[in-house]
Image 1 (cartoon, rainbow, N blue to C red):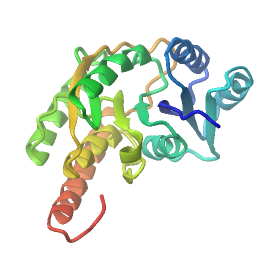
Image 2: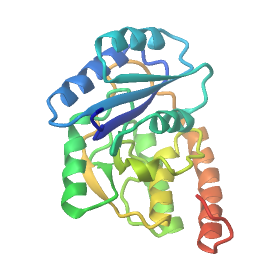
Image 3: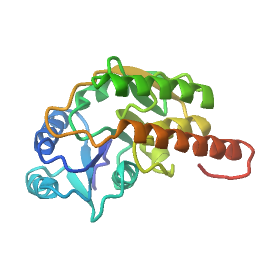
Image 4: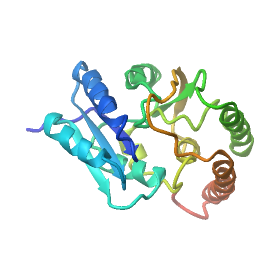
Length: 243
């Protein structure tokens, strides 16, 4: 009889040849020390560097690693969705694959979820390690989110989250890129899921470059928030049945 997987790690990967081997090995070491069955599911989102070949080589060495491959780049949201849909864990930890979040801190989220019987826990970056412009834009966007959706989270767009698998696998994630973590929090809140926040550490990436363009990203984020606001209103009015 196959033992059930308790924890799945889900992450999108795009052109991270300089980071990905170190990150995957680190994640595997953390999960090796856990007392439960786990898996790592990553989506290679059409990488044009050596990311896929590195992951393929690591798969031969790390049995818990599962690779989902997009032939073309589909965007952060779809890549994360593909990873989530291919998990089988009771709980799913989501995070980026560039090393800016420490998987070891999943324990902070897990402890709070178990203690308070929550459906999910989202991290908030106690100190965001980024350019002044990106930090400022992030704070403005978080204020807009609190006003738009009447939710009192400090950092909805933090990538590190822990959610019950049967809940997050049912949610359709529509954002292609940067707004995806916020979309998760908003939709979980809208369906009445019990979620909370925990402070986590954010560090600068050790290698590679960020794919974000601050101004374009902020404009697209605001457009998506308007769409999401309308969809939540329609859901609350029973005009649509699914978020």
